[in-house]
Image 1 (cartoon, rainbow, N blue to C red):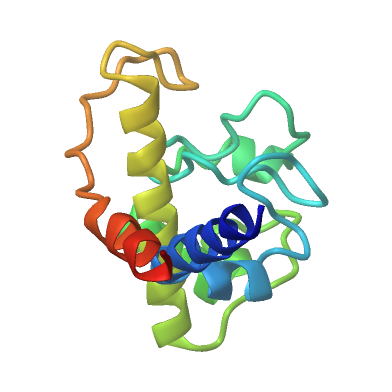
Image 2: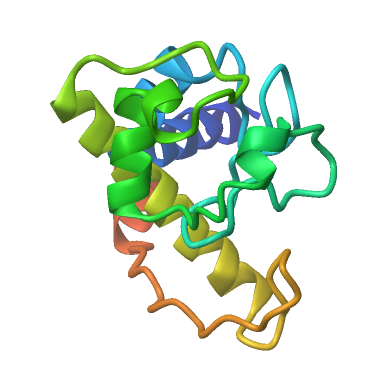
Length: 154
């Protein structure tokens, strides 16, 4: 029983240590309105990188954003996070991120999360727009760290 508890703690620490850069900042700066797994005051952002703006089916986007024609990439997300009203006048997002360094980390996190989602769904799975996407390069994940940590606990 004790070894299971220790193993659980070790695995939790390893998982937290392997969290993508920007994940904690995303939760801190964006998490009040957005999540990766569900809509909140703002839409679910899982898979947003590479997706057309306002294309999620479960969220009531503003007319301005639906008509914008934007596809979310590094440049459009940078502009959006810096000044949403300037990029899409009449949108419903009243928040912006002042720091360019924080915007870069958030964008990198959204990009990585979107690549991870495409890898999990597989290459033939259609995107939300109905167009199949190419598979993302697989992320290398090491089991050695977990195994080494578990062996060290024994």
